[in-house]
Length: 208
Image (cartoon, helix red, strand yellow):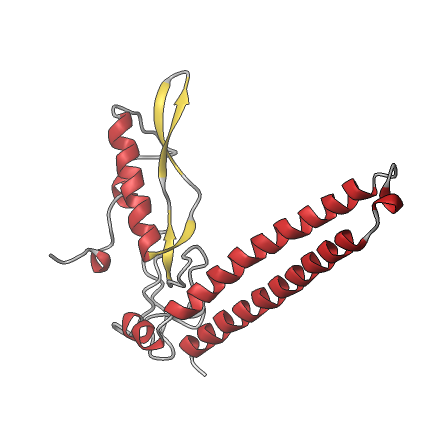
């Protein structure tokens, strides 16, 4: 079983787990509704029983709705996962891992399973991407911090990103800087940092 098959198995297991929890919550909701409908009013009069049971029913129903949405999302991730497409997208490039590292380099370790990733990165799928896109590396966004000395560019903490998230992060950083110009830079965020974190890696630049 290669990394693509492992990913498919995880998506399937996640969907089954979500579906099981949703069915349990749905069953609990119906049980409480039936119980509320069968109780005689005299048994609850003046004891706050109706209010208490209704509150329980509302809480269980809300959880069931949340689980329904979670199950739908898990099902969506499973349905759009195409093993053949993922193999094409993740095919080995040059025998060296392509994962973007924080120092601006690629990982460079030997690739495994005919993928573009090494053994330490091959299973790092992008949890931020709802459709199961692969993490391509770590990236920083840029925001503006306002101080008594003026506005300064600042780097966010590094986050693992998929390709779509990478593009969005760069676009948002550029937009923020354009809106807030002029702004200052210092050792916490240099002009070189800004150039680095607002430049798309060459292999992900869309060819026109």
